[in-house]
Image 1: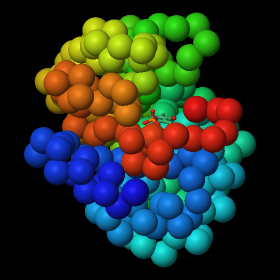
Image 2: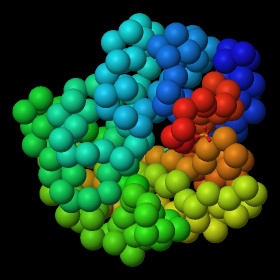
Image 3: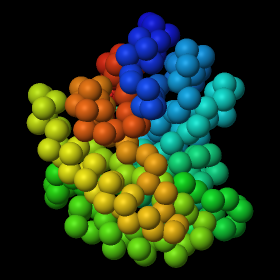
Length: 221
Ligand SMILES: *Cc1c(COP(=O)(O)O)cnc(C)c1O
């Protein structure tokens, strides 16, 4: 099942769009199967959960952190993740800087944009993205490599379109600025129900869980 789902998605995605398998709640065996079928990036939302599966998955892949990162989990996160896609505060950036310096690593990060400006959501408000980028650009162990957004949830994926379009505008804006320490390469948007719209709006990294692994049984999503 997982194998066929991955193959079908990889065939379907346009060139230049990378598929990330969002693997929260999934077992090491499920993740391994996805990688053997051609997945190159695994996304995890919880550091503790990721630590458990990470050491059991023998197949090679990049691991991206895509959840809300608490500062007290940064040290462990820096130990296993290749990219942190959900950076949304200077405080968190400074903690990543500190841990990366100690572990002698440079961490690629994406800025998470709260494109719907929802109160309860993580991510930086669109108007504050520039300031955060400027503040982070002085931290030598972080490398800003793009933007990520979730956007508000809609039954109809067309509802997401304006939020994806807005994030893409920001992405192009900062790309055009050509800041010396910023390399705007990844625009991470779109999930199972919205990835087609996200790609139309410029996403080059889509984060898909359900359509690869099936419905999640747990209560969180
Ligand atoms: C769970 C999750 C996804 C994938 O969601 P699906 O609807 O299962 O495809 C993508 N991004 C983030 C941040 C997630 O938490």
